Length: 147
Image (cartoon, rainbow, N blue to C red; front, side, top):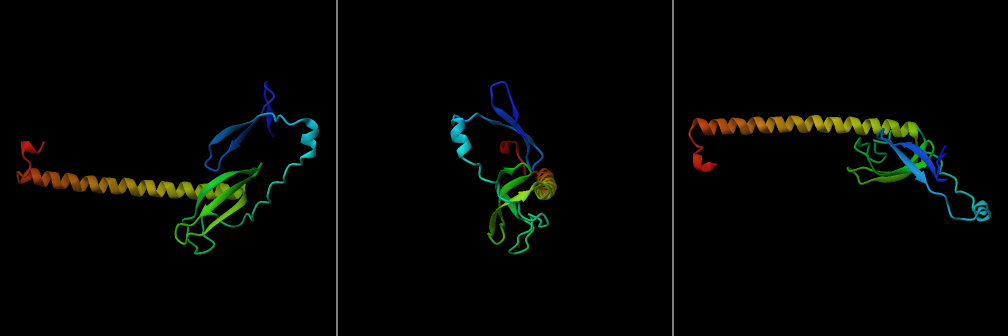
């Protein structure tokens, strides 16, 4: 629930799917109270089923689906645009927080795997460069003029 501050504005803390917390400030509307009562708020879209894993494509079963856009849809749900890089499928929907938390865990797991693979490749490449440099030094293929 938003909290009021001294300036009459409302603030609300939101936990993003990545785990980061942001603070949103809602500024007071300049609409007259009688006009505000006549304009009902649009209801938040109903969240999609909670059983589906968002990282799995419903079209080709690829496990590489990622979020393109996301925004808060309600107190416990997110509106997310998903995309599959394998078949170009995309979907926009509202998903409950628990489902988004599982999706975020999968995304973090994938990021960790990519980081590990990247570090292994960098190490292997550096090792090969060192071996080539050492071999060039051994056969006097590197001269002072090379530097």
